[in-house]
Length: 288
Image (cartoon, rainbow, N blue to C red; front, side, top):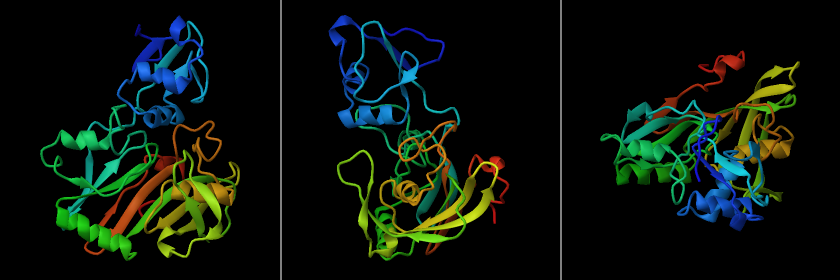
């Protein structure tokens, strides 16, 4: 039975006798019967699932009388896509942290893709890249199939420059280029392999911008050309400087969200820029 709760869950369901000792990811099938197992596990990883008010892992076994609640997407999610730039067949959209880029299989909450479908001038756009749900910043779209093909050509030839800003743990003193090969196949977490990637498009160039000695944190600029899943997050974590708020590759404690923002994209005939929502927390001019 779904009941109201003071935490304002989107959904709340009590565990009954037949579900005792079910894994949490299996129990979620009662709330999301059309969602895949991967999608349910992703909700848990994102911290949107609580058992009696506490976050648990996918393999947690539920007990009779417990309540499983689904938290809403973070309140900083905007009500509509925000267009940053539109030229030469391309559109740059702003995605806030806490919003999925595309809809989860079987449902599972709001997404930029769903929001685009509600607007006549955006419904036919083709998304060209994705950002992780907690990452904010630029998502690119094409107005035509021809523009999408041009984007793929620019990406294949390394002519797309993407600039991210991240607030990381520790004192990073000098610039570094991270060339570790990543294994992204069939796993929840991207894994670092003990070999250098010879493809420069898969490297992450990191430059420290501002260090806060009292908090032992560093604001960094990270530049990539063709990203892999979780590339910047896992590269920085492997370097020993996990991104603040990263619950998958770092500690993620005490932060209101992931401090990773896609702030700029430049390629032939197009550019777009935006500053992070957390800009006031760091004494740095992101417009530079």
